[in-house]
Image 1 (cartoon, helix red, strand yellow):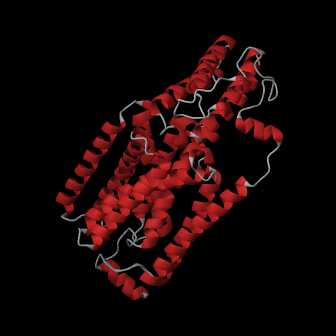
Image 2 (tube, rainbow, N blue to C red):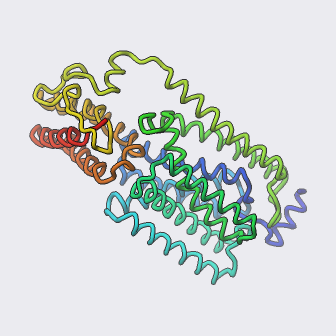
Length: 428
């Protein structure tokens, strides 16, 4: 499209602030979901900012990105997709705040967010008489659009957690179920169902699909995952997103913004080819990296640590009075499975606390926090009640060791309670 034609389109109000709904659109959307979730967890747990600080930072960055997005006069790929990733993070954090901090049931939060989304759509339609995505070309319509997008991420998180945790579906079944629902939505669209309705249904479903697929790649093989790890998965997804967004940005700069209702810039065939190549790259590289990671040799100490058979004292002193992982009694009936790797870390921390090395215990407890967070997607669906009990006790240990003036008695008491529960819930 020439510069003169582009100006003509702009003068007639034909420019839209969102991309065409294409195959690459859906690929980026699914991958950005995993990026958003893992990045927030990385800041909260690995960096150690905590949920409150992470929430504040992400909200502030989202507001700044949306200000830039609203000031643009046409669709700018890198700005738009940056906003989507940030909305993914904040939408997830909203649901987590209701569930984890306020203790709101997933059934209630799913219902509430569904009602909120319905209200957004009703008000949007009454004001604009359309919910068409190709008509996001005024500030007010864009405001409704981003409110709806934020709510869909919160709803998708709540509904996904409800399905995979409360209903014990797990991330493997979640990937198949949500992928199948999206396929059914596409079939319904092809058979004549409304484009607006099917778009928003699919948009909500891509949130739990992306999270389930990300967990499938990141979780340990003991939980049925590919053990790729959160960092490697995030880098892989980010690289694919970057390639697709850069391509989109180049095409927009070269050809201008398409008219309303037009197909993807560059044509449908090329779009399908790029989307297929991106999906294939994720599948091949993900499986390849997972296989390479699994084939890496481990030292005897590492292997023992992963299996939970390190004796007290072997990994930093041990607990002379605690129960060693190797001597712990298994409880085969528990649905959580093998918890020995967490008990090994707790046993090590107990040894440090017994020597009044609270500073060393504070450093070592970081390993427990990271390991527990990494295993959440695999453990929580197995038995959410027992998982929450252990999660609360781990939080108590973190609070005791990270207090401004920690005491040996408080730390020892919280660790003893946690170790007792780990012994009780441990299984094979």
